[in-house]
Image 1 (spheres, one colour):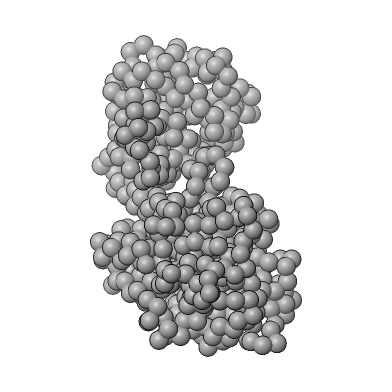
Image 2 (cartoon, one colour):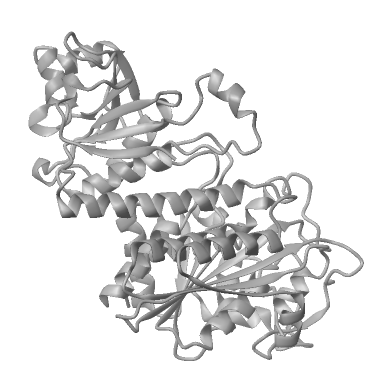
Length: 511
C-alpha cells in the first residue's frame, strides 16, 4: 500500500521522483484554452507564467484522464512534472473542483507513476474534503494485485506501485486534515482488501477460506464474529444457502460480523452475496460467461470491507455484516431446476433456474438480519445481468421498500463518487413469481429481470424494516482497461457507499 504523508514543504525543494500538478479546460473569462489549476503556482512561476502554453504545445488540453509529462524547470530537485487533466474548470471557481474530479486525477497520476519511489501531489486542495478525495485517489489508483506474479520480475520492469506520496498544501497538525487522511486510509485499505478477495482465484477462495479471512480480520479489529458451517446451517434451517452450496465439495458458510459502539443504539445491517464461484449450477452458464465468475462474491467483500472500515474509524453506530457464502457448482448432489427449498424464513421456493442463486442465499441472510430488528438493512450483490443491460458497466441500481430511503442511498453514493441509479419495484412483476408448487419461484418475467430479483428479496425482509438493495453486477468487476482510480479486475464497488451510510446512520441522518 502506498504510504501517504501530509506536507507543507515548497515544491521546488522536494526530493521526489515526480511532482504532480493539475490542469483544466478553461471556460468563460478564462477562455477555451488550458488553465493551470491551483497548487501548481510554483511550477508555473518557474516557467515565467507560461506553463499552460508549454503544456498546450505538448498536446495537453486539460481533459479528464489526460496525463502529460515534462522535465521539471530549473531549480527544482524533482526531475519530472506530471500534469493530469481535471476536466472543465468549475463555473464557480471559488467553490473549487469537485471531489470526484480530484479523486480521479490523483488515481490516474498514481497509476502513471508505477515504478516510482516517491511523488509529491500539488493538486488543488481547498479543504479537508479535497484532501480526503486526493488521498483516496492515490491509494486506490496505485492498487496492484500481484499475489500470483513474479513480483521480482515486475519490479525490474519498473511496475511496482508508487511507494510513497506527499500531499502538498495539507496541514499535518490540523485536526480536520488528519481526520480526513485517517478516513481515506482506512476506507481505501479496506476497499483494496475487498479488491484482493475479488481477484483471488476460486481454487484459493472458497466459503471456508473466506470465512477464515473474515474471522482473522474481525479479531484484529475488535469485531465479534460468528460462522455457521454446514451442520449449523442445516440445524438452523437455512435452506437457501444450503441449496445453493449443495453441489460443491466446499461447504457453504454464513458469517456474521458485529461491530458495536457503546454510545449509539442505532443499528445498520449489511448483507452481502458471497458466491465464491458461480458456474450456474445445473443451469450451467454458456461458454464465455464463466471466466470472471470468481467476482460473484463482490457483495460479501464489500460488506466485509465496510464493517472493518467502520470499526477502524470507531464510528458511533452498530453495524452488523452478514456474508452469505457458497459455491454454485453442478454435481450429483446439486440442487436441480424444479426442486423446492424451505428457506430460513419458513417460506418455500421453487427453483426454476439454479443460476438465479444469489437471491436464494441473500434471502436466508436477509431474514436472519431481520430478526435483530435493525433500523435499516442494505444488501449488496452482483445479482443480475439485466441490471448490466439497463445501467451499463459503471453504475449500480438501487431498489428499496421506501422511496425516501432509496433516495438517501443514491445521494450517499453520489457524495462518495460512486455512480448509482434509483430503480423501481413494480408490483405487477410480482405475479410472475407465483408458483403452483411453492410459496414463490426464484424466477419471474424475463423483461425487467433485475427488478424481479429485487421483488423476490423484498419477500424476505422483516415487516416494518427499512431496506435497500444494491445490484452491483455492472461495476463490481472491470474487464476493460483501468480508468480513473479503478483498476482492471475487482473494483470494490459499493464499499464507500456502505461506509457513508454507516456514517449517516451514526449521525441520525439516514432515512
